[in-house]
Image (cartoon, rainbow, N blue to C red; front, side, top):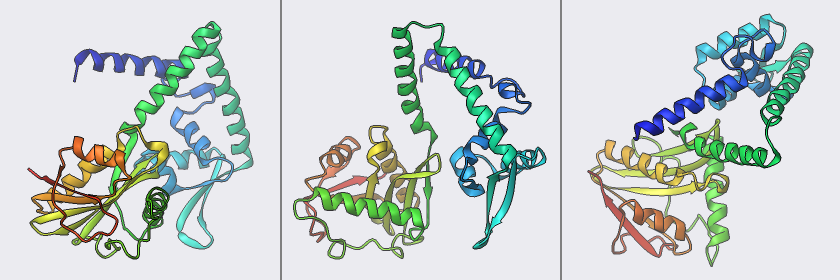
Length: 294
């Protein structure tokens, strides 16, 4: 990477940290560090499961526990087990917590206003547009790729979204019952894997693999949420799949796809996949690709 680019990003980070008051242990003048205030905001009016908070903010369990304990001592939250499942713990704002969160909202608006106040209207529009672009460009670095249980709720939701999109885009619709299988058994180790892409804890894409020893692995069920497209998530899902296929002992990876999925076909070609002769009986396939894994 270009050293001047690294230097510019570090300078930008320092400016933002100073601008929002992240350097003080009395964030927004409220007597607590920024991490505690952020948790109050994330817990919100409806409360939140600790697992969700941990995934959404990328926190380790120890740090989250210490921060929640501090907020409990301040009387701002209560942490209890969910009545229908004692294994699941939730954080809820107390009345004092809701009042404090409202004050944090007011102060945060004031900080944002102070950034805009010295600027002309043209400069304000430029700053807001630039911040929007920066936020979107930072999201790929916050995306996590995790091998998950294909029977989990999020995994089944991703596969359902994938089926729905194929049904809308294919000329004849899509019936998964006549497509080649990729069921939970086939996508569970050692038979295969399902990789889910997550941003702030939410599932935004997936890709599946079926392993066949040293024979080519099969790539299946690749999908990216429409809201996350243009962020390079599809390319990174491919790279993750290739890494896992290589680790399984496969020497190549194969896939089939439909002619309607033009963006996917272009991605495969850019990523080094070569079109080959038909190797499967997939009824919805028009193109077959393969890539050697080195």
